[in-house]
Image (cartoon, rainbow, N blue to C red):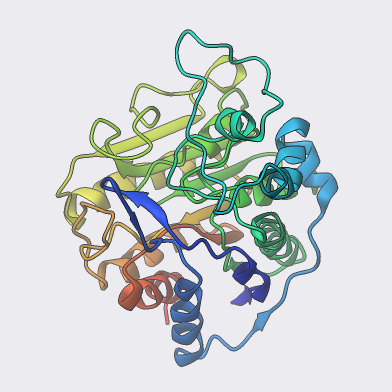
Length: 343
C-alpha cells in the first residue's frame, strides 16, 4: 500500500489550545506524524512518497470562496492588526445574530468561519492545509490509476471542516476532496466511512443534500462529546440526499463489541449503496487510552476494523484524521492498515 506524506505539515505548529479552561499543549501536534511514520517503517510500509502539489481548482470547487480567501490571508491580517499570539476565534454568530455576511475585522471573520476555539491559525496553517489536501488527492489519483488502496497521511486532519468552516483541528476536508476526485473521474457513487471518535460534521454538511456520496459515521453521541451539534441518528440527509447520511452515535464507555456491531451495520449500508469507491476517515481516537476520547477499543481491535473494511472489496483511500494517544497512535493506525491488507 502506497503512503502519501508531506513534511510540509510541520508548518502548522500551534503552541497551545484551550482545554478544560486552560491553555495546554495541543493534542493535535506534529509528533503524531512522527510516531505513525516510525511504525509504518517498522512494519515495512516502504512505499512512502510525497504528494503532487494540491489541485487548487478542486479545492475551489468544493469550498466557499470567502472562506478560502480568509484562510489565505488570516495570518497576515491578524499580525497586521497588532496581535502577538496565534489566531484564536473568540466571538461567534450564534442564535439571533447576523449570520449571512462576514465582518471586516479579522477577529469577526475568524469567528464567522470557525466552529470552536481549540483550533488556532498560525503562520504556516494555510501552507500545511494545502499539502494535507494534496496527500488525499494524490492517494485518490493513485487508486483511480489502478491501485487497490492508498493511505493519505494527512495533517492537519479534515473531517470537521465544511465548505466554509474550520475547527476541530481541521481546515480543508481531505476525505471530501478524495471523494470528489473519484466522482470527477467517473465513479457514479462513492462512500465515506468515518471511524473517528468524533463525528465528521464537516463531511456530513458537504454531502448532506447529495445522492452520489454516502456518508456513514461511527462516533461518540453528540449529547456528550464534540462537535455536540451534529451527529444524531435522525440526521439522514435532505432533498436528493435523503437516506444518504448514516450516523451511528454511541455513549461514553463504548467497548469494541458494541462498536463492531455499528461498524458491521455501516458496512452493510455501504454495500447496499453500491459504491464504486470507498474513503475511510481514519481516526484512531476510539482507543481506550486516548486523552480526548471516552471509548474503550484496544489496539488489537483496530486490526479487526481493517479486516472488516476490506470485506467490501472496494478501491479504498484512507485519510488520516484523529488519534492523540501519542505512544499508540502509530500502532493503532498501522493495525488498521495491516488488518485491511490481511498481513
